[in-house]
Length: 157
Ligand SMILES: [Cu+2]
Image 1 (cartoon, rainbow, N blue to C red):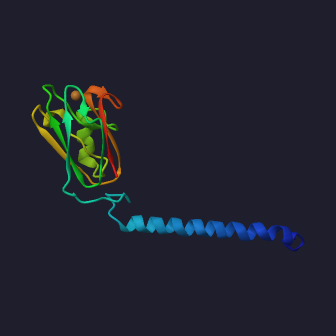
Image 2: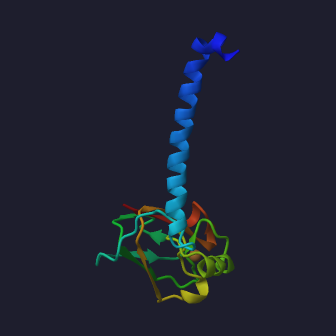
């Protein structure tokens, strides 16, 4: 049976297995690498140590200055609460101080950062070193929502 249609079938039979073999090999290599790593920190993101640079973001009533800040990986950002009101600094992915606390208790990735209003009274500083390149949008849940009102973004190159 296959002898009669061999000239028409041979191309697909040869092409498909080669493609599948390549995909399976690289997939297995990725799994193997991940399995050998730390099971808690499942990230391939490059991180950088502190580079000695420090930049201040003013926390005012009710805005962050500058709103949009670009820094090199390893730079420390000092949030300076110069307002007279309570503020917090939350990644867009969390809803409130309680959500931040829960995130910080379980998530050790670079995306887990921020400070609750209870830890950030007027006159206080919050320091954070951004070690991984990426975009870190944040907001104050007392005076805004993600991207509206009191919000900002840190861009790490
Ligand atoms: Cu606020």
